[in-house]
Length: 210
Image (cartoon, rainbow, N blue to C red; front, top):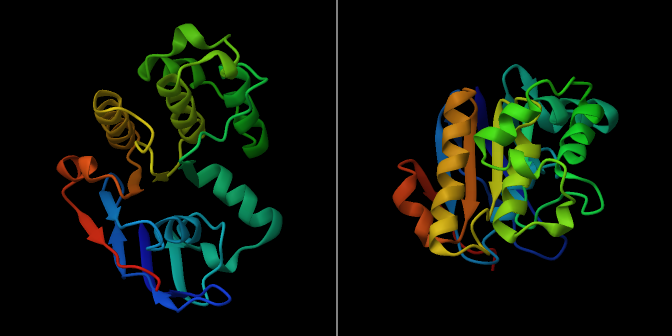
């Protein structure tokens, strides 16, 4: 379903680096480990179509993501890729429910499973609450819900456990895995957090950019 082949990237003054080739099928999970400055977030941004590689192919299904641009890329990403950012990209003045509906609106999806999703993530009772009233763990769950709201084929999680204690870190990883399995989505977790290693069998470790 997801195929990465010959992908290269370079920042203006940085050393070029390659992303290892790999393939994932629906339901597969991959952990990309690396220290700060190793290019983990760059890889995630390339996989999600937020950055264009210098060379190579990023293919999801029958679509070459790196050949899309503008509105076509935005629409494709909204329908097929869910991204959980390190710091939750949710709008604090809106309620939990409104954040999910906003994601639905931009992707043209009706949002008929939003309540079910919030129930699965244990925050249905917070659906009318403003995001700025939530705990850090609850806000991270909302971020996961928003990423999953449009039934993506690929879930990308950037340092989802970085600011969480051990208990909440394990809960978040298991929630991501459960949701990916339930909806037959491929899951890629990008992190420096060694606590995640015990939860994902398939792993890639990358080096630094210097």
